[in-house]
Length: 143
Ligand SMILES: C[S@@+](CC[C@H](N)C(=O)[O-])C[C@H]1O[C@@H](n2cnc3c(N)ncnc32)[C@H](O)[C@@H]1O
Image (cartoon, rainbow, N blue to C red; front, side, top):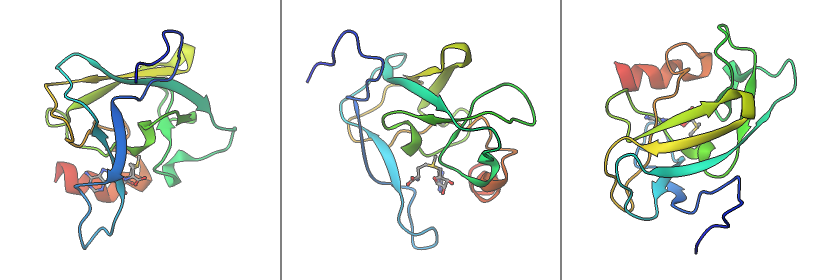
């Protein structure tokens, strides 16, 4: 189904199901997948970011986004659509990239290479190396 030309949120090329990263050790969790073939450089998904209240600590919650360039980061956001379901992979291996427009509270996700239908989508979390709640997956992903 075509998305409306005025929409600020479009995740029509993406769906969510059990992640290929799930295993007996991690238990079952979800991931985002390509609903259609997507070409390198193509927009995968776009959406809005809603800023979470002052005092919210994303270091303890893996489902929210780092939403500033300040370090340590104090601004966290809740992403629309399927954005919260993308799992992570190391730089150079992840097949998408999230572009953050901090001043407009919106994002766009682009394909880093050609992506097949039903392939799991990943992006390198910008907080992967320093966020408390990602210390375990940082070891898995970056060794
Ligand atoms: C933003 S969420 C991604 C969606 C999440 N898998 C879900 O089902 O809601 C981040 C969490 O997903 C899991 N995750 C992300 N990338 C992973 C990876 N490469 N290997 C194992 N777990 C991963 C970790 O539990 C991490 O804290």
